Image (cartoon, rainbow, N blue to C red):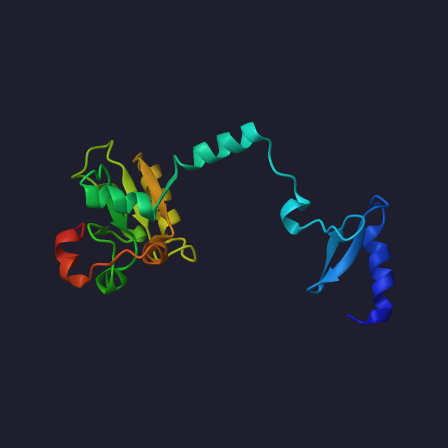
Length: 178
């Protein structure tokens, strides 16, 4: 940004703002600054919810998702009361998957593939990681089929980040859902 343009841009950006608010350029954008050297961050730019709303929100989120640590704990302690679905393609599953997972790509989730499981079976789904929406797509399909479902946040990337081992294609045939 050309230095001569800065005052004009600051005037435009602060029009109608409280006098104590000034804007400082940061990474090609403007950042609000309160009086003195105390900056208002992008974190606090939108106020946090009140405690009751926050508790309600986070309690509700646990109804939709679980994490790699809790899945690992259930699997290794013999307390797995869910079916773990790897919803990536067979090639990715063969390259490495969570031990005990079954492979059912999200595009192939239909009622006929779930018939062996009682209607109240909880399915926990995962894909490659937070950069992949396959688990969300699988969760939508399962929910629309009337099945209980949770998403394992982090997917394979999260599993590895926790330091947990993956299985390889040797377990593919016994774990696949056909």
